[in-house]
Length: 404
Image 1 (cartoon, rainbow, N blue to C red):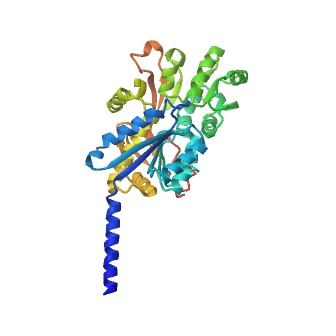
Image 2 (tube, helix red, strand yellow):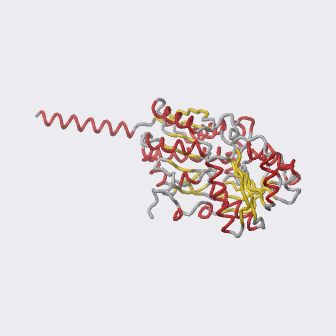
Image 3 (cartoon, helix red, strand yellow):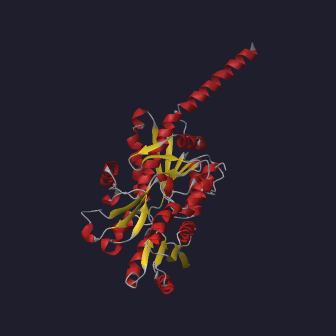
């Protein structure tokens, strides 16, 4: 009798707990970003907006889901990012770390996501290690990476005759990865690297670095940096007469916000690889118009911000497929990998076993002032890199999740 009662009580408890888990539709998203530093224009408060739009467009709140969004500035510091990730997991009950711009902070958050079993959807960082040797079952690298940038811009510039390079490289994980990936592409296409010099993050004076680039006599000065570092380097290169002296600049990571800051008179002719541009098609134009109307300073979205929207959109679709229960991060990421992706940012795509999100990339060139037909009409498309060619082949992945 007692055994029967105990068995019945246990069965009821298990059924209730399973049902409760299945019906758990409380989700908390934490946008970890750069709010005031050199990457705030490409991510920052407008990345929070992109995530907010993804939640709104899902329609889940109207169906009874409770979805909260919080945000914080990691100041581009790995120790701050790690502390924030732990606090969000232990105190705030955050289920998803989104954006996480800057490679050093992203790599610092990665092990915390595993330890706390949270989801890490990275749109902001570039290091290809996030889907390589630093991959995890809880991480998806969404928008772009250093391999795609090198494979796009590095290959095109080298094949066009830019067969000798000198790098100005940001001195942290992203810069090192971008220089290494581009060097491999340059050499694979018959070029050579004559030298490189590292500069601190958020550098204001590039004069000594540019003088070394000039003295190298390399045909191409490769800028393996991003954000304010890139715009400062490009402006000062113009003052030093780098291009007038016969060398060319190759910006290996340039965002539309950077071009807007530089202006077409300074930026025209620069080539870059991106996976998103607001004026690609009707879907990207529709999203970008809505984003611009609500964004700080009414800007067009960067590919990082667009990627945040895309990543969270797919995340929410996976939660619906699971019936709720967002608190098992590895399980949610596994479901995301099972499902094909489809959104107005990248169209149809997929997520590989190594956590690399796959979609096309595009080689663009910045227009001359007279070629632009209006505000934010900055790019002309040079070539489309198919999804299966844009990112590192899975067979070459160092990710331990990939079966060899």
